[in-house]
Amino acid sequence: MSASLPFLSVIVPAFNRPDGLKALLAALEDQSYPPYRFEVLVCDDGSTPPLAERVGIKDCPFSVRFLRDTNQGPATARNRGIREARGSIVAFTDDDCLPEPTWLETIAEAMRDAALYAVHGPVKSAVPPIDPFVHSLNTKREDGVATANLAVRREMLLAVGGFDETFAAPYFEDFDLAKRLEAAYGPIAWRDDLIVQHPHRVVPFQKAFQTAGFYRYLPYMQRKHPGFWPKAMAGVRKRSLAKAVLVLIGLAPLAGAPWSLAIAWIGLFAWQATRLQDLLKRLVAYNVAVPVQDQLAFVFFGWAVDFARWSAYISGKGMQAKPAPAEELVLE
Image (cartoon, rainbow, N blue to C red; front, side, top):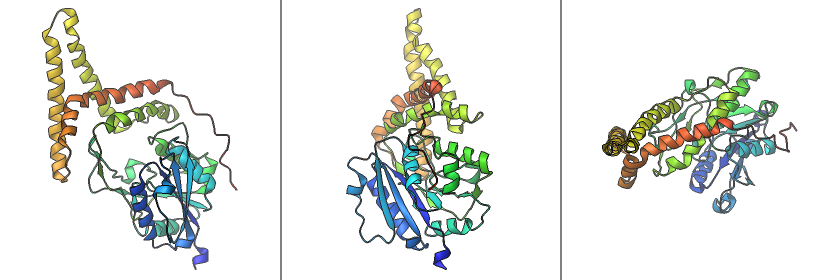
């Protein structure tokens, strides 16, 4: 019976999260699927020090391989995993995720249908994303495909060229892959019982500035897939335009109205304080605490995050596709 089970390759792009990776590997040890019928490829995207040195692997019941490259983003890391994978089916998840014990078994069961080339399922967090304080992920079928919980036949991945390595940050590369796969092979199947947990984490406010640059990949995504426009970005645009009006008011002293600068700043801070009040209500509802210094930073500098995101989007207008790697994805 076990000989008829497909061999699966679990690909995990990882970067500087050894504790999360340890938890993921522990969750994979609890899988109901036979450990000799799957492997795990940890694609270390330039962590310092290397994850292989920080995550001890002792008496692991399944094969674990660490593939290390320079920091080029999860798209490039996953492509390395696809090239190295021995399984006919590739399962993707992330180093901050915890697949349910039946995850691999459900993938193998679904893939018994020869007409099915890919399957995805829900990603669940106990706390919803609360931007910019809480990072988490809750996905439903209508939300699209997330590589935190996706399995694809390796042959089809290779046929569409894998992930587009132009996406050098963890942003849009999974949506892009899904759209290209569906254009070639039809809709990706959904399973309600294919579940991956995504524990939430509180992130420092300054992280919002670090991730603002991800928005520069949106214009490139829109050129590839016209009409694509994430809901979150629509809110950023509205807030940025409104706050730009306040900034213009603040420039009025140049026209001889010295009081306008104070009005502009008071307006910005009042706006941010109101937004913070709404966010705190949500945080309290989920029993999540945010340091006071991060709350104050949001009031005084939260408006700048919206500008940073919108500016990144504008700067990405001229982004060109990254040349195909010299080592093409080939079927072996």
